Image (cartoon, rainbow, N blue to C red):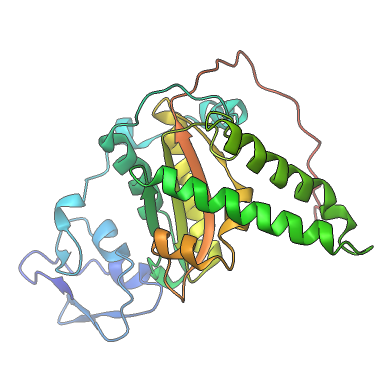
Length: 272
C-alpha cells in the first residue's frame, strides 16, 4: 500500500495534481491515497517536498533524493554516446562481473512500462550457455532445412537466411569456436514480457547501460527466431506461456576499438 504520514504532510496538493489516475485527494488539508485505484507508479513519492509518502510494496531504500550533479546528462554528450555505440561481435575471453550484470538489469527494471505493469522478466544465461547454443543451432538448422525444402515465391526472400543457418550449424559442429550466433561471448540476457513493447523499451535502456559499463553487445534476432515455438529452448529460458521474448542481448568485453561515429540515413520526418 501507499501511505501518507499525516504529521509530515503539509497539504501542498502536488501529489493530487500529479497523480495520473486521480487516486489522491485532500482531506482536512492532508493527502489521502485511494489504494484501490492507485497503480503504484510512485509519482507521489517522487514529487512530495517533505517525504511524507511511502509504500510497503517496494523497497523504499532505493529512493534517492534528486541531485542535479548526479542526475543530469548533458544532451550533446548523450547524443554522441548514442551515435558512437556499435553492435559488438568480437569479444574477449573474459567473464562479465555479476555487479555489472545487475546494473544492466536495473536499467531495464527502472524503465517505464504501460500502466506501470512492471511485467518485464530477465533470463541471464552464463552457466548453461553451451546447452543453449546446442539448442539454438539445432533449431535454426531445422528451420533452415524446412525453408529450403519448401521454397515458394512468397518465402524466396528467406532462402539466404536458411542457407546461412545451415552453414552456421555445420561450422559450429566442426569447431565450437566457429560461433556465429554468440560470437563466443560469455553472457546472454533474454528479455520477456506479456507486452513486447515493455520488454523492448527495457532492452533499449539495458543496451545503453551495457555500453556505459565498458561492455559490448548486440541484439540477436536469430536467437529469437531459434526460440520461437521451440519448447526446449523456452523451457531452458524459463519463459512462461503468457510471456513473449522481446529481445536477446549478447554481451561481453569487446575485443575491438572503434575510433569514430558513422553516417546514417536522413531521418524521415513529417512536420504537421
